[in-house]
Length: 101
Image (tube, rainbow, N blue to C red; front, side, top):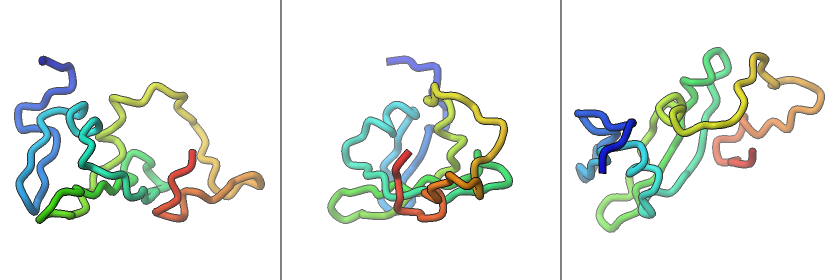
């Protein structure tokens, strides 16, 4: 199946077991990948890191990728001003394992 997000080098490769995901869609729909966390990078939010664990026997490694790599899938609003430090900020982005919102 052709996709607009295909990359000739592939989207991501597991550094431990060598599993390769050819497209962003293949990566996000793989049931053996578990979202493990996110670390914010406030000066450039696209450089925040997403942590995903490859949950298969004889692997279990955690892969990281810049949040910007997932941007083609995002359909929500783009905020011009960071909310960090505002009175109503819930501080979710300061805890890597907090995945709310």
